[in-house]
Length: 317
Image (cartoon, rainbow, N blue to C red; front, side):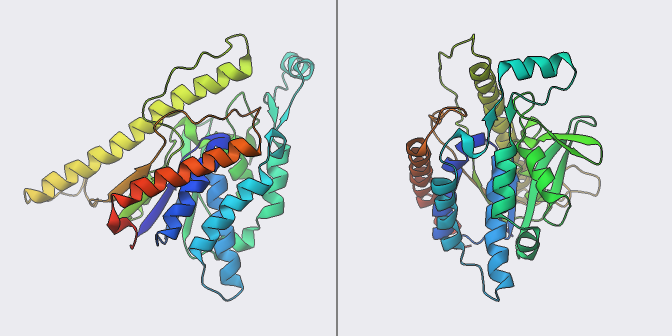
């Protein structure tokens, strides 16, 4: 099974879109799409457009869908108001005092965008698996939500909701927030589903650089803190996937078989390719425009082209 893994990263998802376009144009046909946070938004788009084709009696044109995803970011995500509204500090203060704090940002524009662009019928009709990751902050558990789970779009909002920064999603009385709290790039689920090839589009560099932010600006401080945490979490995710792969490869080469109950029992070696930037992506959540979006799209396209040249087998699954 070919799996496409899409990391979290807020509006850095436009970098991901550029990478996805190149991945799909190279002939990679996803049989499973796994997203977290903004990766969930991109996963919804891919599944919706593929399902739309199926319902029209056609086979999904994955290269065209990848190009449409880039157009979606270019045309629909033109600035912060495309998915957030900054709350006034007076409103935040009052909500905090009265015990009704619901995030520094209002994400109702994001919900409006999701409702206007996607349908649960299209997504359910997609032939590929589609899974989003979110965290129930009461149970502290990471949950994989598949394309048939309802209310699907509520879970999508939860998957994208950075705690404190954004309001979570209340589903069946339980609070759901960003899946990135536990898992920035969901490798374990596609591995468990039997993936043989995984291509991951990741918004975070391996080594985060220096950034002299204004410490007195709480939004900037949250953004910077999130960047630091997510970079480390995703490095851990990738290292874990690599460690499992290496252990399986060495054991099989030595003729070892894993007995039932062993942590690696039933697992197989999976070809994994990660596309990620070499440095922090230059974009802010609250002060970006079309030029910033296009810059990151181009960076994603370039990084994907360079990465895929190194693995010809990933072009034709």
